[in-house]
Length: 307
Image 1 (tube, rainbow, N blue to C red):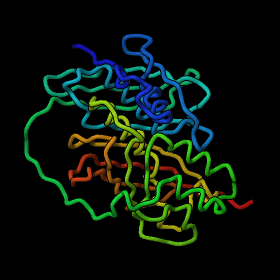
Image 2: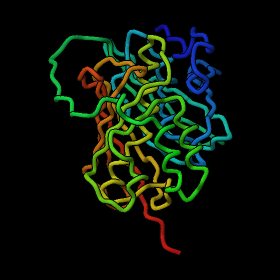
Image 3: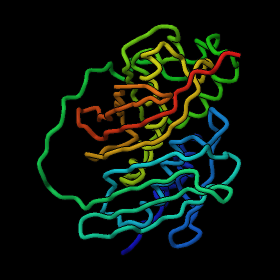
């Protein structure tokens, strides 16, 4: 089987804004053996590797060992231990199965000699079949919503740590992410329906490689999925210091083609939280109403003990 090139291959880096160029470079893993890849990290808002980055890089590694006529249709992943943002991450790919229609890969991410994350991903050749979907929920147009650069500095006094705003802006600088309703850190103390909507797209156009768009959606999918859990309890999250959280596992199903450089609606809700964990479920819709992706994640959600 002929393996595909990296998802960032063949595109002049100068064609992209700085932050997006850096993110694409992050996804362009170094191949150090046939099925072994190495990636670097970018600064995160917390002192560990951002989970969406590890998931996206692992999917890149898996996709690099699959022919380009087999797009990803699902992934299932576990976050094992926090990653060290100052050290490279090695991704080892196990070629589980190459069938006539489906290809399966397992990826282990390793730092300092131990696994920090593992992922299983499945790829399928295109075929026709039964087709139906739910109706897209209503949401305000993304152009009517404030950008992060407009929203966050306006409310800087809500954060006990004055560096939080800058860290959030830097971490999301490659993606235009706009909340349809106030995010949890602006409504701490107010219990709301456990549902959150955000629109997102990259800060610039991308090449046509479907793997690239899937990997970028994977990257963004870990940014806000636990928000709906916080809303149900009037918590603002790590940014205001009333919750300690981390991703535990993550699953995605890619239903229909989409572009991550065009507006996507991330509609998220939480059916349950208990035992120090919360469950988030979500759907990603294209602006013209096609259901593109389904997402489920369980996260650690702990209330800090009083001193």
